Image 1: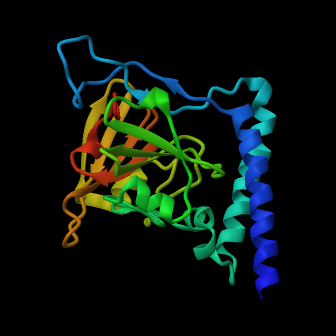
Image 2 (image 1 turned 120 degrees about the vertical axis):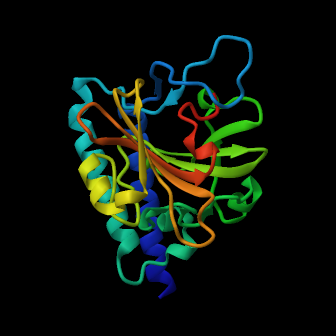
Length: 243
């Protein structure tokens, strides 16, 4: 049994390493025009919000398909019967849906040290961070995912374009506003978002103890979800993240 688990984990590590290398070649980080300012306002001109989006040229389109295939393979291994996800935190992340309270071993309210103790290696995203508000990605994890921390406490999880992560109800990148209404119904509030030419749609849970958490979805002018996040109110609603 131990040898079998080691082989599975070794295969996942190889796949993850390959996906990371391809991912670095195929995608980048960028910014879009600023929306309204909320966090850390000063008298100075407001900074642009941070948005994660692919910057691959059409020449790299052929690379993105095998990259997505690698992610599907990773998820298949994570979800396979007998997969020891508890011993590989990145496997547990791949197998987990995003909830209002976190993703897999990542729980809203945890400290950075708590996450490191679980075996997750965090990498700071400098261009998305400011002062005591910091963004992190996860080393050796190919999904476009961001963790916002204030004073070293995780307050939200962002799912960015290209991710295959979904919510517990099956909403993912590419889902439609109609899908959101079908799943969440009257628990949604929507406002227009000039930065995306779509909407910012907020789901407020009614379960006891979850009223301080939210799911927030950003859509484009075609009504499709382009990115989404979960976390604690009000930080989860900040369109510009830490900036």
